[in-house]
Image (cartoon, rainbow, N blue to C red):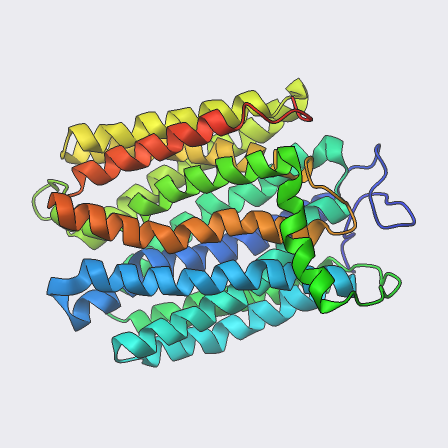
Length: 415
């Protein structure tokens, strides 16, 4: 028997104010996002870094930064484009299924790549198909969940990050010597989640919308940023994500070259310890943040405070190179980022300019996720190269997170 894809909805497909999302939908959102983040962390945070290092250890920072930055361009482009296409079709499930299934051949190709150019091309393809999947999956919340319950639904979405982080870290560490198998396993995980989601969370077929002229569609991407509140939500997310990925993308290298690890502990093993610690803290703050923001009926204080806490956490490894400092950072970073992503996702769904173009506008906002990932590797590589270490990188990331905390203040329509 198929699970209900939403709570009670209106005839237009927008949930009625009193409706609540079904538990089945929340579970499927959790599964779909967990699989996605497991691949992002396992591949982008561990396996890809090891594969690049094997080719040229001396140039690993620059090479990894180049591949990560170029591939993120594909994420930036494909997310809003896929969102607009799913808006136009009125369907999410076909895009979730297609993107999820294509993750498998993309990961196989990445495992077979034996040079920097081929690795870059394969990961670009991976970023493209994963963002088709992600754009449609993200749009399920404004499509099928009423505004009053979006903190809970966003917590289900956000909980996928810590769970996926833990799974991805464990898979990455387990297959550090056999990264082809690790790539395949993570690709199959996303494909399986896509099949299960689309098989169980069925959606009604809406009326076909007439296609808009190409020029109008291109202009529509920029129109969302003319909305005052949406623009500030975009800026705040971009700043925080830039600071976050400037550090997290290089975590393996930080543990290799910055942190004083306990004797006998390999950097890959250290990642497998830190990621679950971060994930547990993130899971707690994701659930509590979403629930408390629903109960309080407020979003901005939670978003601003969690971004400020992220800045404070980034100062810890800047001041100390010890393993204990990294553990403290892992806990604080998890608490801050989990609450931020859960509540900010709810906030964003409440400042969308139009309900009819929710996926397109969320795709534009997701440029604030993907765009900084283009810049972050180049920024991190330049800072590390110029300063000769990672201390200044943590300080720069802390300043960006603090700026992200301040950016939430001008938003007017959400408390």
